[in-house]
Structures are given as structure tokens and as C-alpha cells.
Image (tube, rainbow over all chains, first blue to last red):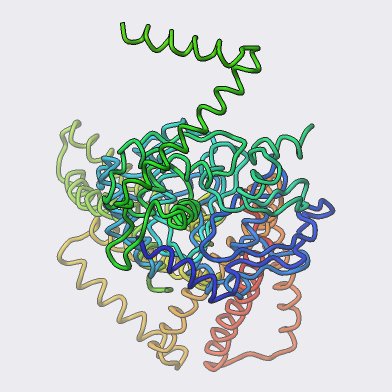
Length: 246
Length: 123
Length: 259
């Protein structure tokens, strides 16, 4: 992986954001959930989508996935509106475990291999083995923690262009948190962008390049982590506490 | 290596400090090959881009050098490592002296105290 | 991609329907013995056992039928509108492929259940002499149809089969459309799905009634009328199905509301 430098350089020059939101708004009935969001994310970046609960993080991620349609504005993944094409390039981890529980680990591997051309089955199998998961076991028989890990393994075993991870470390113990973050940074495709939505900032801060703060559907800030630390002399976590002081 | 980070400085500059420490202390011996960026990033639990940035900076200082295909190595220039060691020592002493003078000690008192502590440690 | 969806949909449903059909097959064989037993034996115990098996057999038939229906509804509800929807709707497939895979698999299972139940009944009642009789009876019915209506019996049968397919598909789509609409609301998703099912049912009946009145003016008669009638029925079913298909896909595309 020492050609990481070259890869990072080449992707920076190739231009073209992996994800672009232009004046993106979404409301549920009369309730606005996102208000004129504008940002773009370049390949090779790990970006934290940070905001308190109910700030619109999940809505934003659903819009990028095409699980919701924008009320106005547009969202572009690799230059395209979300659809069949972009889903082949986006690897999505929902904020809950939603794997079909009747499947065995092997059937789940078949499933991902059938639908995603970029699925690295050997990588997934290796990680499952490392966790000591019996491949004949059904998802139903696994503990909640194991299910979460299996789902993460499936998502990170793809060589996607954009990884969307919705609350990947919500409600897990510190050891699992480390496992999850390590799995993310060792497996993501270096030419891809990773978006991690969370409100547990101090835990993810070290792995982020950039952060986007959103609050009550508004974008508050987009900046690099080291820039915040350099200019403000405080961690992103501390800045977050200051910005979102109740 | 035991990687630790505090909250007020940029992560890449903390990484530079810790890798320097590693080189000076011999955890990364002179002339030896460094692990890949990704492995080092994983071990430290940081973003690979940040690790990359720290290593690039160290390369500029000359403490590490990269060979096109073989990877990245710690410098073989032992005097350079000695200089770096000396610099690190100086910063530690500086911050120690500032802390002590804040407590109200004069230079002579500090020296006496240090001598006392050091000899006690020997016994 | 549709073929892959179908593969996994059959995998998900087959693991339930397969064993059920096997149980049905086993019970129908037992039922066959029981019938002979009830006929020939006077032993009280054997009679009770035979009766019990017959009851089980009937229950099993009911269970298979109900399960086919429940599976059709549940696969759509949990796999697309429940948590699994997060996985399904982020696959690189279109909504159309999703809906088609569900329709095709459901229709196949309904037909399979129909065939399985007929077969089970045949097995239960099987005596070598029966086979000849049944074949004879079918031939006679066909001959009657051909003679009486002066129409092609085979043609009629084909029309009937097509009508079955289209009718089942269109009924499935009615369920899908009601669930797709019901689940687009924030609360009471299941209740609203049921309500919308009856709303659609009512709308259909209303349209059907007014449609029947408009047909009064026509003068039907003769063998052509039967064909025409069948074709109209097929056309109407297909049209109704198409409307529900559009409702379903549009709701899933524009108003998907996963929790």
C-alpha cells in the first residue's frame, strides 16, 4: 500500500467529486428536515458527518442512496442522480442491522457476490473466519454484536467508490468500536470516499480527514480536522460541544 | 509502538513527534524499512492520509527517505538521529524548566533537586 | 439482474414451501391408506387413527393455501418495506425488477399450490381404476365443450390458464399496491394497508358494476361470445393489474418511507 501516495495524488488530479449536494432540501410534509445543503466530497477522503440526533444526518444519507427523493435541489453521486447505476458504486451501512435473518453466512456471501461486481468474497471470508464465525450459522443465530460486525464486513468488502456508514459505532462497546474503525481504515478502497455519520466524535476524530457539521437541517461547517486543531487549538469534539452548546 | 494523542494539537504533528520518538529510541532502527502507510495508520488508529502527511514531512526533514519501489526507510545518518534526539531532549527540558519556574524554583535549586532525584534513583 | 433477484426470492420462499409440500405429500399418502382402512377395518383404534389422519390432511391443505397467501404478503412487507428494505433498495436493481421478481415468484407459488393440492387429493383418493376414470372424465368434458359450444376446447383451456396467471398476478399487485400506499404513511402502516386494500376492492367493484351495465346493450350469443368474454376478462384483469403495478412502483420510487 505504499503507492497510496501516488494514488492519492492521481485521484486528486483526476478531479470530479464523488458526492455533490447542490442546494439540497428535503421536507416531510411541512417539516423541513434538510435546508439548502451545499457541499462536495473528493475521492480519497474520510469525512465525518457530524450532528446531534435528529439533525438530518440519516435523511441526507437516505437521499444519497435514493431511498428518499429530494424536495428540491439535487444530489449527485459520481455525477449521476441516485439510481441503479450509482447503487453499484455506493456501499451503504444502515444505522440498524437489516440482513435477512434466515440466511446463513454462506448464503449472505452468495447474495452480495451475485449483486455486486465489486464484492471481494475472499476478503469477506477471511474477516468472517477471523471473527470465528461458522459459515453455516444463520444470521438469526448470531448475537446482536456479531450481526453488526457481519454487516460491516459485507459493506467494507466491496471496492466501492463511496462508502456511506450511518452510525457505525452507535451503541457498541469500546473494543468493538476499535474493531469497526480498524476494519474501515484497512479495507476501504483508497480511491473512494468514506462518509461516517455519527454523534460520537471523539471516537472517530483520529480517522477523519474532514468534518461536516449539520444541525437542524442546516450545514454549519465543512473543514479539515487538522485545520480545526491548528486554527482553533481544540479537538473537533471540543469544537462540536462549543457549536452545539445547549 | 504505543500511540497516544492529545486533543489540542493537529494529529499529523503529533504523529511526527511520535515517529521521531520511535526513531530516536530505536523502535524504528536506523536504516530499517518502515511498515507501509496503511499498516502504520491502522496500528496508530488514524486516517492513512494523515499518516501519509506526517511521513512526507519527516522525509522533508531527512529523518526518513523513500525508495521508489522498496518503500520507506529510516535514515542511516546516525548524526542526524543524534541531532533529533538532542532536539527532543531540549524541548522536554525546556517545558520542565518552565513548569518548575512556575512553581517558584530558581535555576540553582532546580539543579540541586534534579541531582538529588537522580542519585536517589541510583540507590 | 432480474434472474438473480428471482434466484434469491425462490431461495427465500422455497425453504418454507418446499417442506410444506413434502408434508402434504406424506399426509396424502397416509390419507390414502386411511381411506382404505376406514373402508375395510372394524377396529375402533384404527378407525380413530384413520379419521385423525384425514383431519390432519385437510388441515394441511388449508395450511398450504394460507401459507402461500401469507408468504406473498409477508415477502413484500418484510423484504421490501421492513428493515430488509435497506438492503434490497440499495441493490443495483430497478424498482421494476424488484416488483416483477415478487409477482413472478408469488404467481409460481400460487399455481404450484393449486397443482399440489389437486395432486394431493388425487393421491389420497388413488385407486388404479380411478386414473382411467379421471382421464376419461376430462376427455368427456373437453368433448362436451367442443360439441356444445362448437368451440375449440384446447383454446378455451389455454384462455383459462392465461386468465388464471393474469388474475393471480393482478390480485397480488392489488395487495402490493395497498401495502406500498399504506406503508408510505408515518404511522399505522399495517392498518392503513388493510384499509387501502378494501378501498381498492370497493373501487374495483364499483367500476365492475358500472362496467356490467354498459355491457347490457351488447348482444352476446353463440360460440364467439365465449371467446370474446374470456378475452375481455383477461384484458380487464391485465388492465387492473397494470394500474396496481403503476401505483406500486411509483409509491416505491417516490414515497418510500423506511423506518
